[in-house]
Every structure is written in C-alpha cells, then in structure tokens.
Image 1 (cartoon, rainbow, N blue to C red):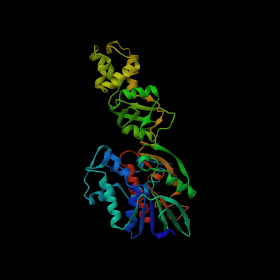
Image 2: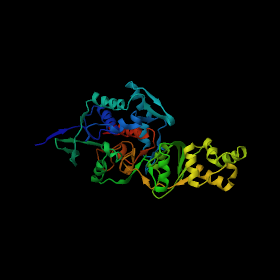
Image 3: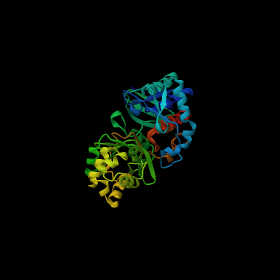
Image 4: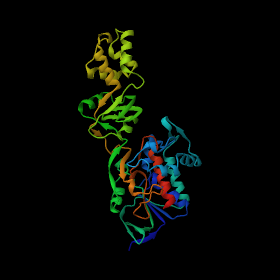
Length: 395
C-alpha cells in the first residue's frame, strides 16, 4: 500500500516561482513539500543571462508585462518588488551589476541564485522531491490528493508552478495547463515569446550572408517598438530588439526595422553626394551602417556606382531600405529557443491579490503558467518572485 503523507502546502514545480513560494510559505511556519520531475532544478535560472542570471530589472512595473488583463500583475508586483529581491540577493552576499536598461546580473554565476533559493527553502524545512512524477491530482473533502508512484501527498493548499512550454529540452511541459483544464479553468492558447524570427528564402539568404552581424536598431510592430541590438543569424533575425517584438508580432504581418536609428538616411546620403560625389555608394554608407550590411543592401537593390551618379529616387530607395525596412517573418524558432511562453491560464480565474483560484479554494497558479509575460531583461524572473511570494503568504 502506498503511504500517505500530509503537508500544509504542496508545490508542483521547483523553478523560480516554486522555490520562492516554498520559502515564503515555510517562513510562515507551514510544512511545505516541493515536487519536481527533473533531476536538476532551476535550469531556467542557470542558463539565463549567459549563465549569470538576469534576475530582475530596476524598472520593473506593470507596463513591462503583456496579459489579456494588463492590470492583473500590479498587486503581486507591489507586494514583492524588485527592491525586495535585490535585498535578498544582498543578504546572501551575492555581488551583481547593472547592464543596459536596468537589467541586473550576478557578477559570478546564476548558480548563486539557485543556491540562495534552496538555502532559503532549507532554512525553513521545505522538503524537496526531485525526479518525481505526479501521476494524478484530485480534490476531496477540502484537500488535494497528489499521487506519485512512491507516495500519496495530501494538503489543503496546492500551488502549481510548472512553467510554460518554452525550452522543452530542460523539462518544459504542458502539465500546468492540463491541471488548470482539469479544474475547469480557461487556458488561453499559448505562443512562443522572446524568440528569434524566421523568414522565407529571399530574406533568409540575406540573413545567412550577414550571420553574426549585430546592429543597433529600432524594431516596430504596430504601435509597439523597441530599440536594442538586432542580430543576423543563419536562421533569420534575433537579438534583443527582435526577441522583444516577437511577443507582439502576429503571423502574416510585417515588422518595420530602422537599421540606422541615429540618422535620417536620405539626408545623410544627400549630404554625402554634395560633399564627396566621387565616392562609391557602398563606401558612402559605411559611416551609416556596417560595411557588410551596406554591400548586402546595395546588391539587393542593385544600386552601385558613384554616389554622384545616383538619382534622388535611388537615394530614397536606399534610405527607405535602411530607415524603414518592411519584412514579413514566416514564423518563429518556436518553443525550442523561446525564453518564455506567451498567454496561458486566464487571469480571470485568479484573485490577483493572492494568486488563488476564485472558484477552487486552496489552488494557486504562479509564474509562467499564468497569462502574464514580461519584456526581456529580468522582468519574467521578477514576476516569478512576486507571484511566488504572494502565493506563499496566502497558501
């Protein structure tokens, strides 16, 4: 007979949000069990920020998050702020630095954040079960029954912190969405986000030729735009500006790219035509955009020769291609490389102040499984810390 064990709180998922919830609940004197199917926990933390973990952003606020209810995240973010997490990092003696746009990274290693969270859990007696598969979850007599092959765990409070579908090779799964549906909760169709964009043959060939080249760019979709690095790759376009816009882009539509955001390319080229008329056009462009990109664009538009020989029409064509390049992605690289999952559990099902289901007492959903997705730059980790904390103080 499989043994039954009771806890005050059971958490499924030992990632960023799960560990934060476990430590918080434990600090309230609750007995806490945290279950994860993986052998190594916190893998998204470990691989983030090039191995240094972009653990939050000093500018974290609701404006940096996408959700069908843009106000939903406000309560959690105000209950546990970026300053609260920064203070926790300082308490553990982890040194860090700020990069562009308010992004905070460990000086040393992302493993420090995992170790910090595990110590917080250990200090309050959280029990961690790794390599443990949950066979079923049921609810009876105000308690959740979590069955595994080894044991049956029982608790009045169950927190689902299983993440989304992004990066399946480190354990991402649809488990959280299945549990939501089991309890009659609506899941909004998901989509890979913060992900490189792919293109059809003609554009793809250009990208391959320029693979490895990075430029400062403004990338726009509709009324939303980001100015950050853009990277040409052998699979399409990537870099922070592309990852950011991927969360907004919808299939079948163009994105607009300004490859020289500091200049009006038409005015620049007209001035060069006056100043240095005998210069080859691609050499005239080198002060505006990188040489490889200048050659590629001139070849693409079949514009060559001395700048003095170019008509205003050709100069305008070049300028438009540089300042207002309209290009239609064919898709994305998918969950394989997506940093996060867009959409998920409909926030209408949850109390924003507690993360508890409105119609299912004692059931909480936190982190990426919920329809709250942050911009690139530490925002998604802050959502994990904030939503995990809020569930932890209420479960």
